[in-house]
Structure formats: structure tokens, C-alpha cells
Amino acid sequence: MKYDLPTVARPASVRKKEVLLIANGDLRLSANQNCWAAQAEMEAELMSAVTACGHTLRRAHGFKRDQGHGFIGSQREGMDVFHGIPADAPLIVAEAVWQYSHHVLHGLIHRTGPTLTVANWSGTWPGLVGMLNLNGSLTKAGAAYSTLWAEDFSAASFRNKLKKWLDSGKIRHSTSQVCKLSRLKVGQTERKLGDALARQLKTEHAIMGVFDEGCMGMFNAIIPDHLLQPTGVFKERMSQSALYYETTQVADSEAGQVRTWYESKGLKFFTGPKHDEHLTDKQIHLQCKMYIAAVRLADDFGCDTIGIQYQQGLKDLLPASDLVEGTLNNTSRPPVRSRDGKRVLYRGQPLPHFNEVDECAGLDGLMTYRIHKAMGQPVENTLHDIRWGDWDASGTTDEYVWVFLISGSAPPAHFAGGWKGASSVRQPVMYFPNGGGTLKGISKPGEIVWSRIYIEGNRLKMDLGRAGVVKLPAKETERRWQATTPQWPIMHAVTYGVSRDQMMARHKSNHIQVAYAKDANAADRVTLAKAAMAEAMGMEVAICGTRKNGPWTDAK
Image 1 (cartoon, one colour):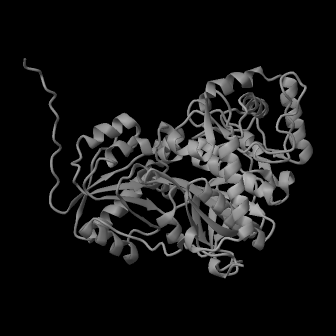
Image 2 (cartoon, helix red, strand yellow):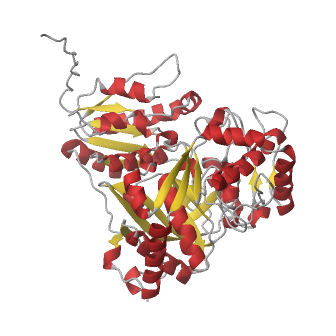
């Protein structure tokens, strides 16, 4: 019998010294349209750099006049684009914006030729954020890639590295800041605590409540069950439709009590009359209902931590979830009673929330909460985007200062002034059609531990490091806010012993987990205890950089 076999088209081969380019974008049309001009400018500069290195750069997909942008805007479109790209052709993924990694991951993981991810260095156009997510996703998938970033694509430092990739197909960066935990001495007290907490988790188990997976194309943010379950943590998969329904069932009087609580603590709401432009009282009212609904659903399923996706699905039904998320992460928060009114749920404690349902941050946040609680340290923690960084224009510090920024889920305990130092303003219209308020504030000076769980080689890994949060003048803070997203909470962070380029070369996510300690010595002890806990949970652990007062090898 003869069968009709499918015909598989072969893409045309590229010319000698020709490099292809793709630009991956957002799933939301409004974002792609608003960001296209910045992407086009970046591509023009990159093309000049490639030409100067003796090669030619050609886009592998065109500008869509009917949509007003040239981004890949969906997984289906990405597959169609890759049908025309030879697997062995050199390829640059150029990013000046946030991108949904799953739009292009399918094509990148099957490549045999060299792949280079490239990002601009800008707070306003966060290509570096999108690229870090794509890099983390490629790492999880086991796909080979090189990476570059630059403020100026005409700079000799960038072009020299670019030429090396063009000529050899590979480029490496210094990661001398990384030290395996096995090479460091962990105090007996911290080791025992980490081991005991890991043993408790593996024995008694914990539940991670997941309101839909895969937010914003973040493949790297999903922990497969076969890697998560050996740690003692198990997923409770819930639908955001359940959160929406539960929100509609909360009484107006209960929501009103939450808002009264907020205002009694000093939270300032900046409201206006127009839904499409301002934060309205109706939006705040729905956010208060969503907060109560989230706590009740977490209690229903016995969750120890929860993550709300929001960006897709809920954005068409409800205001932003960020005010809810930041409140959940705070010990001091409005009390929520069970539906029958007999119990206060999660009394006197935060309900750790992982923004954008990033499960790596969720596992990290749960570990952080338990370590800090056991050691008598502040338990509030959150993820931030590694949004951008710059030298301090005010001259207050000579250190390179990162802008850690997230859409609102930072707890007020992190802010200078706490709740009184917090405000809530409308989320940007481009991403949040139904508005909703943020939880905005300036992180207080102090000592923090930063960390990230990621997946590589089908194994959970954790990087940890130390940093300090510095106080910058109001004018410099405002400059950084205006260069990024002024509606969102900001942290001015100085990473100890980790330079800008070392962080970019090593970090496998756009997200970074942070938590305060009472002082530098306490933060050092927390870092080592948390590292020991992660190791006892089966993770490969590395300490990055130094302590505030010197190398880790000098620690006592």
C-alpha cells in the first residue's frame, strides 16, 4: 500500500557571513505597538555593528503593517517564522522589550547553529529583562546560546565581543564571583538548622497554590513536578476563574473594612474619576475583594504559599492583583475571616505570594519565610525584576546601583516608613486595561540576602548572594523611577562582589528574590543557613560574590 507522505519544505540556506535576526515580542498588541520604535532603533544600531564586523544582518521576518510592529507576537507565528530559518544558520535574538519566551523556544531548542541573545541596556525599554528570562528558559531547556548586552552598540567593547561570536559562534563571560557551597565552611549551627528545616519540609510537606501556570511565557518559572516533589513541596493547581468567582462572592462590607484598614495604616490612594486613566474607587473595591478571596481560597486548600498569574485571563476581568500580592507578603495586613466568620485566616503572619506565578520564586519565598522565622529575622520577602542599573548620578555612592523593581508585590515592611511610606497609583494602561492600584514605596536602607532558584541539567539549583540597599536622594530616586516605571515599588541595591556584567552573565531569570536581615552579620548567617537548607533539599548551591566585610572564606 502506498501512503501520501507529508512534504516538508526546506528553508533556503544563508549566504556566507550572513546572520539572521528575529525579534520576539509580547502577546499583547498594545505593548508591541508601543515598543516597536525602540526595537527598530536598536536593530538599526545592531545592524551597523554587525556590518562593521564584516558580516551582514538580515531579518528573518517582516514588519506587519496591519498591526504596526515587527515582533513575533504568538507561538504559532514563531513556528511559522522558524520554518524559514535553517537550523544551522547563525541567529541573533534581539530584544529591546519584554518578550514571551514560548513564542520562540520551540525553534531555538532545535537549532544546531550558533545562537546569540542580545539586549539593550535601558530601564525604559526593558530588553535586558526579557533577555534574562529567555536565557533562563534556554538554560532550563538545555539549549546552547551565547549572550551580549550593551548601552552603546557602537562601543569597541561590544563590537569586539560581537566579532568573536560572529567568527567563532561562541562567547564567554567571567563568572569568577561564583563559588560552590562545598568550597565554603558553613557553621555547625547554620548547617543543623538548614538540615532540620529541609527534613521537616520533606516529612510534613507543604502546598504551593498555583493559579494557572506559564504566566507571560516564562518557561523558566515552571518547576516540573518530578523536580519539585522531592523537596517536599507539592502543587495545588487552581484556576484563576475560581479566584474571579470567589472575588464576586465577597460582601461589599468586608471589602470596605479592608480599605478602611489600609487607610488607617497610612496607605495613600491616588484616585480619579476615569476608569481608563485613573485609579478609581471601584477598582480599589474590587482589589479589596480579591485580597479576601485569595486568602480564603488558600485556606480552603491548605496552601503554604500561592501565586497568581493575573497578566493573562484575569486582566480582562479584574483590576491588577499587585496590591493584593504585596499585602499578602506582609505580616501586618488586613485580617481576613473564614466565610462563617469563626476564624481569622493565617493570623499574625504573611501568606507568601510569588508574583507572576513564578514557581522558582515561590519555592524560594517559602524557604526564605521558614529560615528567617527560625532565625528571628524579618520574614517578609518578595521577588523583584532585575529591571536596570546605573551609576549614582547624585554622587551619594561610588557603587553601581541596581534598580530592582516589580509591579507592586513588594511588602510594605520593606519600605521606608512601612505602610505610611506606601502609596497606590493606577497601573499603566498599556498592560492593565482594568486598572487597579500598585503598592508603591522606596525600599529602606539595610542588609539583604538575594537568591534565585533555577533549573539546569534537569536539576534544581540555587544561587545566593549578599547586597545592601542604599538610600539615594529624592531627585536620583525620581530619575530612576522615570527611567523605568514610576508606579512600581523600587529598591536601590548594591550587590557585594558581583559586577553588573557578572550578574548578567550568570543570572538565569529576570526575577531575583530579596529579604532583609537585622544587620550584616545576621544576613551572612541567613545566607549560609538558607544555602544549607537548599543543599539538603537536593539542590546544587553556589554563593555569588562576597560578604559586606570581605570574602566568605574570612567568615567565622
